[in-house]
Amino acid sequence: MRIAVVGTGVVGSILAGHLLKKGEETVLVDADPERVAGLKRSGVKIQDPRRCISGDFTVPVQEVYQSIQEFSSKPPDALFLSIKACILEEVMQDVKALKNDRLLVVSFQNGLGTEEVIARALATRRRVMRVVINYAGRIVDSQTVGVGFFNPPNHIGALEPDCVPAARELAALLTAADLATQYSDNIQFQVWEKVILNSALCAISALTDLSIQAVMGMPQLRAIAEGIIREGMAVAGSEGVSFPAGFFHYCVDYLNKAGAHKPSMCADCANRRKTEIDFLNGMIAERGLRAGVPVPYNQTVAALIKGLEYHIPNKERS
Image 1 (cartoon, rainbow, N blue to C red):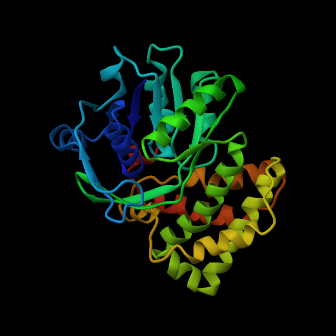
Image 2 (image 1 turned 90 degrees about the horizontal axis):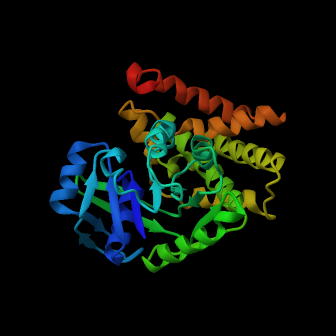
């Protein structure tokens, strides 16, 4: 199977590196010319000294491009989108131009509703899949990504029954590449679980420039995080997603154990880059208002992050 990984940040690099290490034909795409040059020169470098996944390694890259159009003459069989949700619609314009009517498109991202953005752009749900990623890491330097943790498995789901066999095949392929992945016939549960957790930690940390540990250690901020969780659960419930007993306490316990880590939204705000807030608290607020579910915590933090985004140059803010 020929695979393309679009976006070589932390998530995309770990994905691409392990696929290449396994010997899968893998094409990499990144809009940053310096990153492309570095990948061509040095390959994908993964630091994993604690062997959270498979240890340290470097693997060469045969094909790396700055745009999807550059490999359109030889399109992939499956395309993994590991880009920020806030640029997904723009990138999908290039994906649509690929001449492969059987192309499988996988949302390998955080955020609520990314798979629906893909399906709308393609005008079909039959070739679209969603993965909920349970690993993370950090950029060590311009050529190296470090693995921070992996809480296996990842989960993959299909939007339509026709795509279930392909989703199972990709789950097996990822698992063989040391990225343990299970097929889920209820992927929206895993999507909502991850969105609620990310929404409870990312925006508050970004607004205060505090680690998750510090946020959860301050009663005033902890109360906001708990309010975000409760609202997220209520909105998910309005869409037919049910959580097991004790889910709220599971979320709080997860945040309590997150440690002195700052989510990437902190760096986005500090460096005046667009965030994924529209697909986290913003999307919870939007869906909550549509369903008549009160969402004051999510509305407020989403609005405050949008206020910080106001400082982004106009061409990047749009």
